Length: 125
Ligand SMILES: [Zn+2]
Image 1 (cartoon, rainbow, N blue to C red):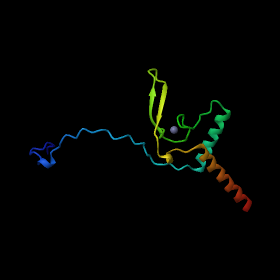
Image 2 (cartoon, rainbow, N blue to C red):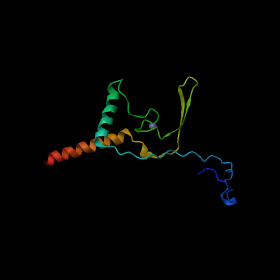
Image 3 (cartoon, protein in one colour):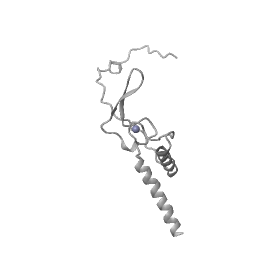
Image 4 (cartoon, helix red, strand yellow):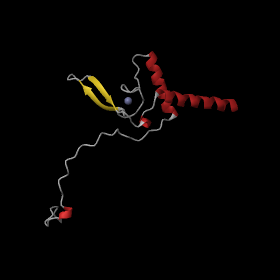
């Protein structure tokens, strides 16, 4: 069996050169939105709190947007680096899928709600 086609394709099926394309405007990525479990929220909150007291703690917040996300920053459109490799500029998207970024306030909210639910349960039981 050969992969080469011996008879020419009918004109309708002949490949044609693609038209000179103007690249479409860039669109911010829209990856799947991960849910945040209570355990993960507590861990993240602890990390953020540690940053306040321990200068060597690892800050889970994005260095660019100060939000929390598990992939490359969905707000960053492009970055500019100096010849020495230092980040000298960040361009953000005007809009982006905000579901991809959690804010520390949301994490606090999740943990506080869970703690209140626990207190309510204890009060009842
Ligand atoms: Zn970010």
